[in-house]
View (cartoon, rainbow, N blue to C red):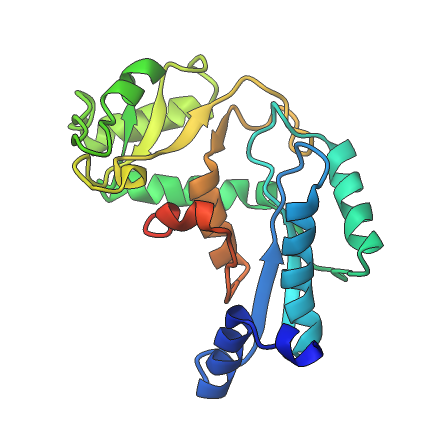
Length: 240
């Protein structure tokens, strides 16, 4: 039984990556959003990611709270999640992180995208953005604000950061392809305005990164070698 457990396809990939020299060490992560208590699916992810770290001398697993949606998150859930991980028999030593640790870096990344013409501030309503996204069979429609100049976008993003605009008035979108067969690639929103206090940063930030943007960048910052996700995120891989 032990041999079969240690030879599933994920562990085989990791063994191959180590043997080939693709990675000298392995870093996984368990990245819950602290917006509720854990369920059995979380337990499976905990056992997989932390288990891989325990099975390999050169591996480690980070605990990172993806706290980018302050209206649903609080410290009660953070503490409950940590207790549950310990109850399952795992620890993370000093490797406890939060997406909010990277808010300044993430904003810097977003600014760079705008400077390179790869992101723009969209002032459509949420309903219009949804309608213009298209469907699985019909392409999306470009936002009328997609052609804003870099200077206009930079000025608006700065004003958003300074709290000068109300929630829903603007969002920052990545400029990718509104005709992509993958709906996730149709100029996804990467920042939105929220008038909500954050459980760690308080009222420091009036704008927050979207999960799809923050998740991949956080993995990069932490040098995660193997991002293990369920199949529901398969369509998000190109954006990741």
